[in-house]
Length: 526
Image 1: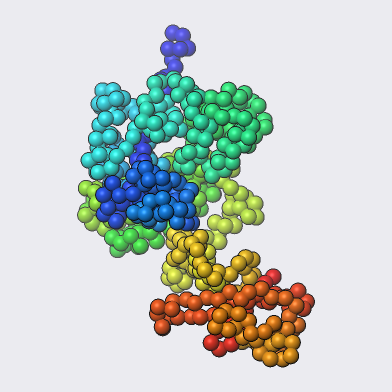
Image 2: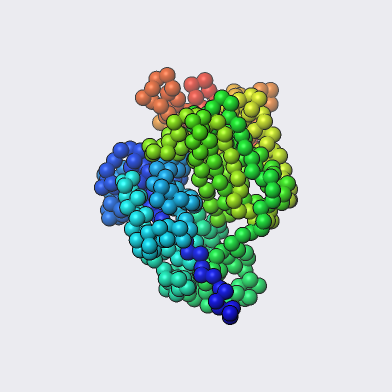
C-alpha cells in the first residue's frame, strides 16, 4: 500500500450566497416587490443595491443624493444588521431542513459540508439544485458554489460555479486580485489595504499572487498577507483546527421566567457573552466558530453555528446571539418556537490561540477592556439598561446635537445620518468641551456697545471684548456667524440662533451662540 492510497480526498465545502441581501431584507421589511429599485445606505453612501437599481446606474459607494439623481424612483433604506439577520433566519431554516449542519458566515451567506448532502442527492449538481429550490421556496434567489475549501467555495458561489476537486488554484488564477477582499466575512478589514498593496506592486490577478514563493511572502509581509496567499493557492486560510478546545468553555443561562421578548433575550445573551469571553481569556484562546443553542419550555431545541474570519470579541458574540434570538423569536418560519426560551447556551466549536486577538490598550489580550465591560454590565444589571450609556456621533448642526448617547451593548446607530447635508453646520474642528448648561456672556465692540446678530444673520459690530461673569478678555479674532433656524414648523421646538467662534487674548478659543436671551458659551476649544 503506497502513500497515495492513504491520502483522503479533500473535504468539499458548499457555499450559498444570496446576492444583495441587505436590499432583499429591506424590500421584505417594506413589503416591496423585487422589481422596485432599492438602495441601502450607511454613512450617506450606498452599501448595497438591488439588480434593478444597478440597471438604473446605482452603484455601491455612491452618495445618497447621486444615487437618487440617477434613479428618481429609488427606495432608500438605512443599513440595519438586526433586520438582515432576522430576515435571513427563514432562509437558513429552509437550508437546514434539506442539509443539516449549516454555518452562517453573515446574513446572506452560509456554508456547509458537502459530503452529507451530496451523498443524499447523488451528485454535487443535484445537491446544488435541491438547495437552490429550498431557498427559492422562501421567495429568495441564491447562487451555489462548491470547492475543496471554504474561501474558494464562497468565491465560486459568486460566480455560480462548481469547482472540480483539486482545481481550486486553477479556478482562482484568472480572477482579479481584488476578489481576495470582496467578501468581508472571510477577510479581516485590513485585507483591502493588502489588495491595494498588491496592485501597487503590479500584481493584478490571484494567479500572479499565488505564484510568489510562500517563504518570500512570509518573510516580507504580515500575517494577513500570508493568509491571503494561502487562499490564493487554494489552501485554507487557517489550519482546519486551530488547537484543541479546552474543557468547560461552554456557558449556559437558565431563563426564569422563560424569555419570549427580543429585548430580554438580547440582555441575557449579552451577559452570557461576557461570561463566555471570561472563560476564553482564562484558557488563553479565542473563538472563531460559535454554536448558539436555545431550549424552549415546550421541549424544542434550536441551534445555529456562526463562523467568523477573525476571532470573536464580546461585542461580536453579543451581536450574533442577539441576531439569532431575534430571528428565532420574531421570524416567519416553521422553526419559530411555540414557547418561551428556558435555556440559552453558547459553545465554542473552533478556537485559536488568544494571540490572534487584537491586543488591549494596556497590553495583553484586551484584559482591561474585558474587566471594564463586565463592570459596566453589572452596573446595568443594578441600575437598568439605560443607566450606562456611550456616545456616538450623529447628525446635527452644533456639537451638542451631534452627541447621541446609546445604552452600552445596544447597536451603535445614531438617530440621524452624520454625513447628510446640514445647512449651517459648524465647520471643524469641534470644541473639546461642550457645556450642556451654556452660561451667559456679553460681547461688546471697541466702543463698548453690545454686539448682536441681525435678522440677516450678520454681526451688528466687530467684537472687541468678551465678558464672562466678573472676567473679561480681548477678542483678537472670530469666525462666523453661522445662523441656524431649527424646527421652524413646530413652534414648541423652534430654535433660531447664530454660532460664532471667538479667539481670545491668551490663545483661548470659545464657541458662542446668540439667541433670544443674548450670547451664551456652548463650547471651549483645547
